[in-house]
Amino acid sequence: MKILVLGAGRMGRGAAYDLIHNSPAVESVTIADYDLVKAETVAANINSPKIRIKQIDVSNYADVAALMRGHDAAISCVNYWYNLELSKAAIETGTNFCDLGGNNYVVDAQLALDAAAKNAGINIIPDCGLAPGMVSVLAMHGANRFEEIEEIHIRVGGLPQNPKPPLNYQLVFSVEGLINEYVETARVIRGGEITEVGSMTELETLKFDDFPALEAFQTSGGTSTLPDTFFGKIKELDYKTIRYAGHCEKFKTLIDLGLCSSEEIIADNVKIKPRKVLGELLQRNLPADEPDYVLIRLECVGTKDGERKRLRYDIVDKYDDAADLSAMMRTTAFPASIIAQMAVRGETNLRGATPQEKAIDADRFVAELARRNIVINESEITD
Image 1 (cartoon, rainbow, N blue to C red):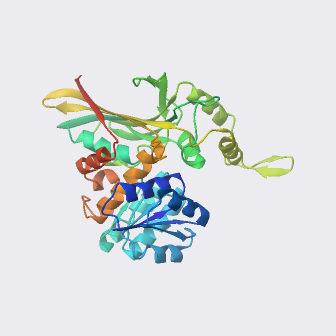
Image 2: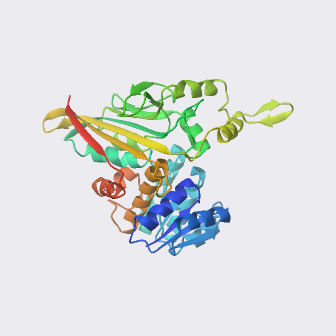
Image 3: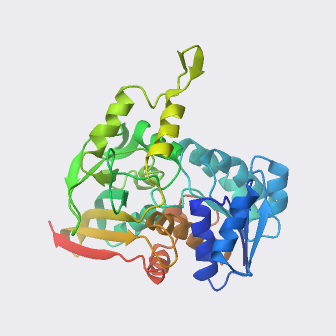
């Protein structure tokens, strides 16, 4: 199979690495980016004769469509606002497509292309990164273990191995995506109804072995399509982001001061958007690309074998120094690569523009994670 990777950033490199080193059925990988030097750097890092590079402006629909032709699948590792038009190009060219998501409104517009994608005989699967993404499929995997499912609780975080003040956080993906998660509302199921709650709220503590104190709080986007998928089937569903203790209060102060606002203000006769300034300062002052962890805790509660039980999945992934891949790259880009390949092989549950938890065979997906040493530690207790 021939796969196109759009974007030569961290996640584009992670996807290309997986396609080359973990995917024997892949014949060739095209890495495309507006910055040809970035694409060349990724190609040199992976160092495989299967890789070719291409310069592309993803906002140019005609050029993107021309590039997609001849590929079995395309993986979007560019900013979320391009994904709707990229999905349309994929339908026009009959190319399976998945992306890393990042915005519920864009995802809704992509899913509205379902009939056209079915007619084209392809899969359009948004939100195929970590969260949303991998955890959505894991939620379905866990739910399938119960005769009757009542609750699903998802906790996910990317943490530096060596936290540094003031935020004890490092940038592991787009700063725009980070701010979105912290300021937009979160969709949850409460008492069987879909509702919204504010981000940076409902702070809780949690423990992982060998880690210091951790906290989790509501953030936007992590549930993605799960509330719609499980509506009418469960009573409670939520997603929270994991950070080192104290992070939430510090960042919420920045939000409360208006530093995440996109409304222009005038300072010294210059119009500026506080959010843009904050984003620039975060990129300048926070570490990036240092050794990291990704922590995942997913709990399902329901009836199993006639008893009310709680099933817990824990994943602790860490920076791979041999491959120079962060845990965030492994747990975000690898799932997208797995899903793209499943679509090409016809291993999805259905065609069309569909949420990953519906389209992806959860057992097969979990087996592919294990093959990449992304290991689920499972425990079960009777409530």
